[in-house]
Length: 274
Image (tube, rainbow, N blue to C red):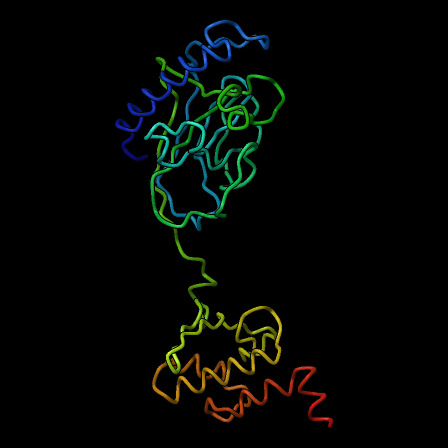
């Protein structure tokens, strides 16, 4: 587990401010209709270990909720006071007790917000925070109600939290891809972004140059652009990449390969029939 003392202190201060604010708007300090009080929940705990992730999920090693609830994942903006907008994921509904190896999907399933990304894009600090189900509806409403429902479990007036350093690892498929990213080509003063090319037939030939999932005349045109750039010394292909776009298998990347792609399309087939 990472050293969280400074994180806990910062979150504690934020938690106090949140509880004070909510006491003015949501009746915190009194006993809500569902019977929960807002005193300490000394049995609540969470253990969030440093880990590597492909960026779409994280795993909470252990979380204990004295009453039913959830565990939310906040990004580091929580430490700047962004109590609500820092939530980037939440667990499924958890019954009272201790739960181990709780997987939380990030950037989806948080009512009241939308995300412009589907995975972590860089390494960083994330914070796990157990939350109550204060309204008893088995849905995490903390964000949707701007903190009015389903607030965090607390101890000594501080939110119960644990932080972890999450390292984002590249997807194995991306690491192994012949063309892991678009090919930037500069020809005659123009820059063209191609692909990344795809092997749509699983035959080792990357004839879908623009990577849209189908082979069309546009792919033949883009292949010709690739050949022009290679011949002009503007583009270097690895041996593996050259083999992947050697469509006719003659051991060279030439305009004949572009013609071969064109002939495989419906338009090319019609032209050859004429």
